[in-house]
Image (cartoon, rainbow over all chains, first blue to last red; front, side, top):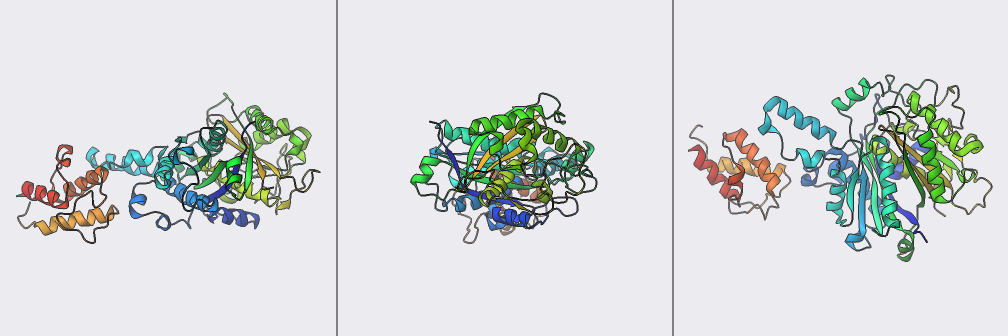
Length: 404
Length: 82
């Protein structure tokens, strides 16, 4: 029988503040972390978690990951170290780009002062696997450790890969998630040139007035453990990864398939992997970027994959509260979904006011809503989907279960 | 280079740089080794850049292997500025 994989710890640094519970509580309270058109982690102070040397040896994206990781490990009861052989603990961390600020600073040094001025730490800081490496080194994680790069689907792909690693017997536990820090001049200009970001500076997923995403930064980290081992050590179980599905559109480098066929296939696969039916889904944490194309194709995908049930299930977007965290988005949203399922509540899509033609799902406007439970017994864990789609046509979907 | 550069000045430049790099330089003497300070090869490459900016002395990769202590770097800079 396949091994079950449970979530025993979560951590997050987001524009709503430091901490997974901070994200959960502030989003439920209807607070938005976006200021002046960006989702900056203004409360984040790297020196709280990192030594001066660690801070110099990491780009901001890895620093955010380290802070989220510390929280997740403490949450899992791993404060004194992992309760497994070091080689049995893996680490998979997603990112869209990696050390963007380091890349820009080092390139400026090359341009302005010549090749000898380029800092030796440039590559080790900017490489996309630097976050996974930093977590491995700081916490002595000696199993399979690598980065995953799939644009805005990276955080979800990372969690999916971590689940498979445990199911394959290659690890007893995996520290996983995603991190991104691209609030830089180059990234802002490049996304604006693509017409992907909101000129209004407002993230309002599924609303008729939506005009692009709001760029954010942050990190989300989850501690996943083989359920048998977690129960054996008496761990508190926060939730479970019930299923995972991933596909690709093979359609366009930036635009999603208009009908959301690849996304729908990923949702179906996640449900099949979880051995569940569409009507079992209590909540959908949408990718919901606030771009005209994504929110329409994702709505189509949910209708295609869930059928009639799509119009009954609450669908909301974390990006309405924190913006789009790119490669960290899927991880932060998995954290948010886990806590929402535990509390049996659907957080709201903030700012949703004007329905768009054809976008007619229940996007949970205004305020959070208790989950209905779809007629199952009250003790049954709530079931949610967390969707992520990335440039390149990557679709990744997690089926999560709340604490029992 | 003006002849007023002293060993003390060079040592101070090194201490300031290593402190910025995150090393604990509280009880540092010229004999303190980089190993004791947990200063590795990446730190030394950065230190070389600081020395080059400050004293126009180029420390090549081939010099690095010989540099085991703070005093070694001071001596090398003194030798090449005099």
